[in-house]
Length: 317
Image (cartoon, rainbow, N blue to C red; front, side, top):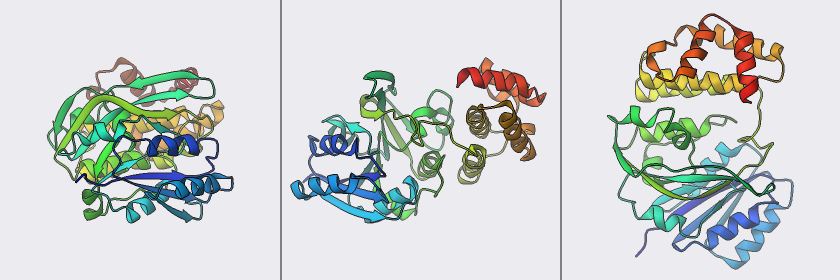
């Protein structure tokens, strides 16, 4: 008998995309599924469209809540999931037909990590693709091989992965009710509780890049939330501020905050001051990164060359 897999889908005003998302789930070659859909206070036709699918397939479980954000919606999904394994899917994304089947081949590992393809359906172009290497990592000794510049983009998101639901529930792992960084903190919390990670080069998760959504657009006050990633990681993984992992996460959070404050130089300076007041700029060291651009950014930060930093991130944004 096949193990039950729960797929958690939070939905907020996705009437343009939810039908294709649901169709891709119902078409999975691995059929022992529980599809947990959380309506996060949608004001469009998303709920009506989902109800049409419920009439066709009894595997769908539908819940509604007042709009509270994707993290809270996922927590509701976890609470109501009954599968042995769990996957997360965003309502504007789709899965290849053999996505679940391929990830379940490696279910003996505590975490299975697959690749992702980023596309713009509206412009009908492919943005980029991330193909993880085929390998096995053992924790905690290999944590520094996971939390690096090259590997972190795929490890900072909860989509594209197969989790063990009992590990999540037994350790009371939940998403923080924030708009940015909730995936990263959840992933770090999960990694701290497991022993094995299997990465596979298979790409079956198609991420639809929709400009203006939380994951693909500029946000205000990013630093307040981005800094939680290194702060939580320090506590969860028992890191020192001199460790390579903490240094990487702190610099990454600073860069993301810089990237989101380039509308005007005045806004950028204000953001830089917030970071400086938190003492983050004094804790970065050159020896913790072998990337020339990162050392250049640290140099600019140390000497408070804010205008050069602004121009650099303005160009990159």
